[in-house]
Image (tube, rainbow, N blue to C red; front, side):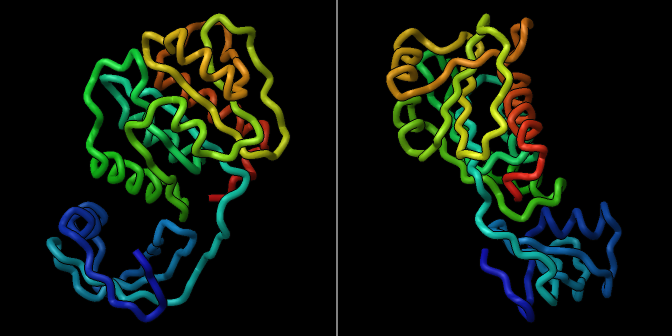
Length: 228
């Protein structure tokens, strides 16, 4: 959504209910609104209806250019907790999230709107003004070729623990399903230039592995980039 100073913004029922009945905001209270593409505005509540809040946007409070370097998560679809993965990836600064239909995926693809809602709520909670780009349903080969990454990593159990690079380059990290990547996918990854990485001596479940990998990369970047 495109926002701008002076705009009157009417919120949907879910957001309105949260502001009025959970946060207990009243007419005249101030808050911040972001558009998901790098802009954040001061706002004042002008209509306190729990079904349809109206905000008056004021001055631009923050503007952040397109985040660099890119941090791309290729996450194999799992039967449970894919929402948790997407939420944590948003909180940990991923710029792109691609939910992969892996060879060993054993569940149906989630609804796009459902995951977008998870992303938006996570962005609100952690205060980021850029929301990650989301894609769902591509295979590993198609998804990996979509992003221009100088470093491509794929987490594989029993691989020697990796010390991630502190080089500020577009980075892609691929995390497999509970049954791991298939031999065919591993070969495709090698052919595409992916480097096998280990996340420690303990075999991690997919949601944990994704969080560990992203936080390890961000820690090596001193949590300064990408600025989201």
